[in-house]
Length: 68
Image (tube, rainbow, N blue to C red):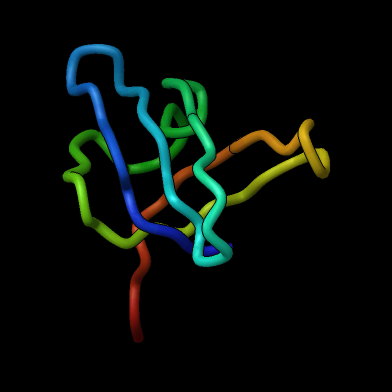
């Protein structure tokens, strides 16, 4: 799944992503802990890994989109 960063706190490494389907999903530091992500900016495109479904959908990983 992909989306756009809608908010990001540089002190807590948490924020939210607006998915391409129009759903805003919050994320915590745990979603970026095992990735090279340390700085995000509002409007940046990212790739998401999620778990759950419906109202229980949560972000488990936020990572940069890399094109080969």
